[in-house]
Amino acid sequence: MLKIQKFTFNPFQENTYVLYDDSKEAVIIDPGCYETFEEGELVAFIESKNLKPVKLINTHFHLDHILGNQFVAKKYDLKVEGHKAGLPTYQMAEPSANMYGFGGYKPSPAPQVFWEEGDVISFGGQSLEVLFVPGHAPGHIALVHHESKSVINGDVLFAGGIGRTDLPGGDFDTLVKSIQQKMYKLPDDYKVYCGHGPETTIGTEKQTNAFVKAE
Image 1 (cartoon, rainbow, N blue to C red):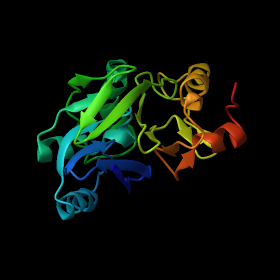
Image 2 (image 1 turned 180 degrees about the vertical axis):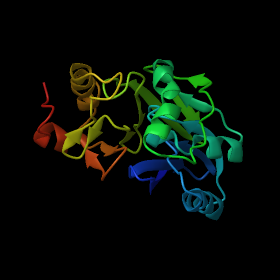
Image 3 (image 1 turned 60 degrees about the vertical axis):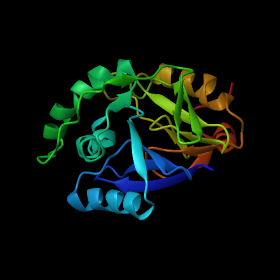
Image 4 (image 1 turned 30 degrees about the vertical axis):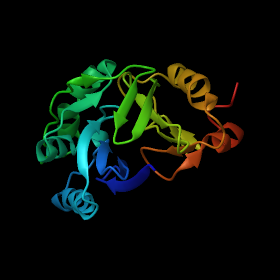
């Protein structure tokens, strides 16, 4: 059975997720740990469960979602994984860190493993289906675990909101299309784990989201 642990890290209040099962293999998604105590919190949880991280996946490469990439990649000898269309966003992370005053930013290793729409990522006894959902960022993906009816969707869909599209590479119409044609096609009872804020469900957002209506 898949288990999902959420951490909220850094001044952007970004949600980092650890997915794991009884095999003890784990996937770390969007490690945003910036401060030393945040890194310690993540490691303490992993050690308390005797987990073996086998993948580091970014839904996208905005600064707040990759602040902990270097730490996690080095600590667990992992490559950074994501979507190739996100490389320009990754390249803007260091200038963004300087702009936002993150003087202690540890640059993320360059992404080396790339996933496309329809790919299946396997770990332990679990499978994650990849959805390509650009709009908030050009190379944005969501990860769907059908057995538990869960989707880790980064900054695409929020509880009562959607990802901002005023950052470089963002596009409102593209985001609306991603939500209507990908996210809203999932069953209503699928739980959405967001990049910021609380969880929601597909059905709730289809019925109440003021920004994107179901087709």
